[in-house]
Length: 112
Image (cartoon, rainbow, N blue to C red; front, side, top):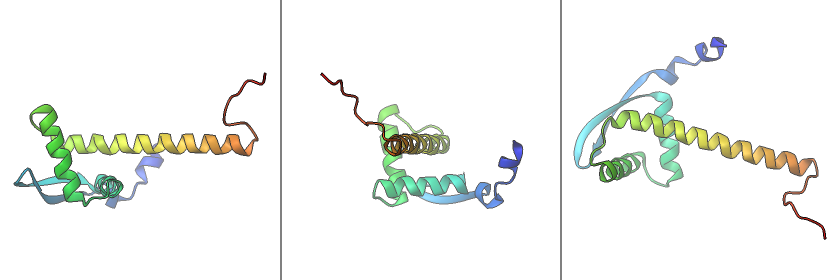
C-alpha cells in the first residue's frame, strides 16, 4: 500500500514559498507544490488570478471569523475539500453514465 504514496514525485511535495499581499499586507505562504497546483485550479474555476482568489478568501474568512488564523492550514483544507467535491461529482457523473449505458431510466416514474 505504501508504494502508492512512496512513489509520489518529490517535486509534488517540495515546499514553495510565494509572496502575496493579503488585506494590504505583504506576506509569504509556504505550501507543497501539489497544494499550489490545486489552488491555481480553484482560482481558475472562479475566473480570477490566484492572488485575487487568495485575497478574496482571506477577506471572507476574516469577515466571518474576525481573523484568518492559520491561513496556510485553511488553504490545505480548502484544497482537500475541492478534491473531495470533484471526486464526488466525477463519481456521480460516472454512475449516471453507467446507468444510461445499461439502459436504466434516469427518472423513476410509476406507470398508471
